[in-house]
Length: 501
Ligand SMILES: Cc1cc2nc3c(=O)[nH]c(=O)nc-3n(C[C@H](O)[C@H](O)[C@H](O)COP(=O)(O)OP(=O)(O)OC[C@H]3O[C@@H](n4cnc5c(N)ncnc54)[C@H](O)[C@@H]3O)c2cc1C
Image (cartoon, rainbow, N blue to C red; front, top):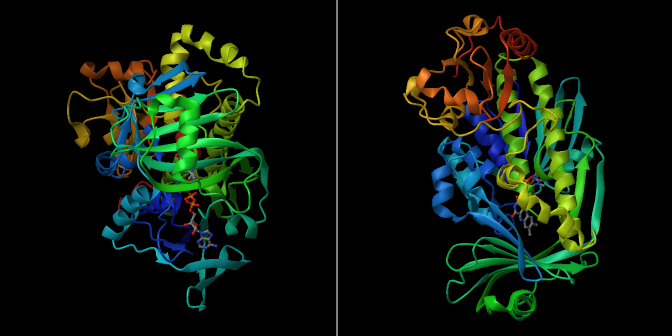
């Protein structure tokens, strides 16, 4: 078996490991830190990320440990101009979860530990030499010992200052905005009934409330200029002063638990897949924190990559499937970059403030955008392909519960969680599947009459097919002739005997 090295045990490296492990693919995972992070960092876990946890049967743990947030509100001079309501999402998780990043990471790391996989902590990637298809990697441990080992694939999930990106000579283009933010997790004596994630915007700047459990709230405040090198950690009084300036009705917090500051970035690497080196997460992209997309987008990179690498290594797919990581994640990431850049400009006043009226108020009348597109965007449910595509190809599979328990699936989320490629159709037979029958990685699911509503959700006619991939996205929708082309281009149809273990 070819060898894989994951650099970085942040949320993205851990998620990649968990999904590779689902297929019994062996890998090493190292992190230069001797212990996992204790910094609160990413708080907002999107419905798309909860869905990724569902694929590992870990969603319940995440939901139980976090705090559910149903809506996002934005106020301009204390007047609400936007309410994004998750209740319209086609998901069984119609909420974001507020949970500090160390908790999210703990769930994933414990999941790996239960399979006997331990992150090698205190191991730092230093360099590599490439000889044909092999990377001879040099790693320094915390005691100063040098280790060398050979790998075929390297996954750079090593964060913003990625060593992998640097060693692979991949540019990281973009900018730091001329502003930064300070933030604090603070507690209130009583529940302040902050209804959801709330943006308070005025002429000067903005303040964001992100509700957490135990009457805790994260407060984020925009400050002018680049982040000072001293990286300020605001105290309780400073935070309370800002709260009374932006929304005095909330009152004062009585306790500060954690505070920090960070830059607003907007960066993307030139390449995310080069000579068997993959970049994922912050190593690949950095966003403005508006909308809480950083970790969430990285987790979508992880699930997109892991099953493709597993299928490739098991000989089920051709290299073409692996190549789709490149284009699909570039498309998705560029879209997130553009939209966070736009939203940041708008709320930070870089786009003139009167444009808030022009940009958002008209959307209140535009029901479809307001009810569906906007919540989908913030939930991380945007499509992988260009928005010009008017089919469900490249979209997250919508939540649907089946009338029977065929193949052990009760719903579409359990279908992708099986780790298999599921072909849905109302047709009796599927000729491609006839060639794949013996391969345990593929299932043909004939949609029963009682479940015909699923064809409407998948936007397929009764004589068409929809292919659900193990990352929870629809890889294909359309007619049989195109389905054959799709499968022929991505899969080794002759190698039909591969099995799950
Ligand atoms: C204050 C703050 C608030 C945020 N809030 C949100 C939010 O609400 N929602 C959201 O989605 N995102 C948020 N983010 C962004 C989020 O924290 C990051 O996007 C996320 O941590 C990226 O995960 P990652 O696994 O790609 O990288 P990281 O979490 O940075 O992990 C990379 C790991 O690689 C290790 N590493 C680095 N170099 C090496 C090497 N040479 N050898 C071995 N190991 C190495 C590091 O030790 C680290 O553990 C926030 C960020 C900050 C700073």
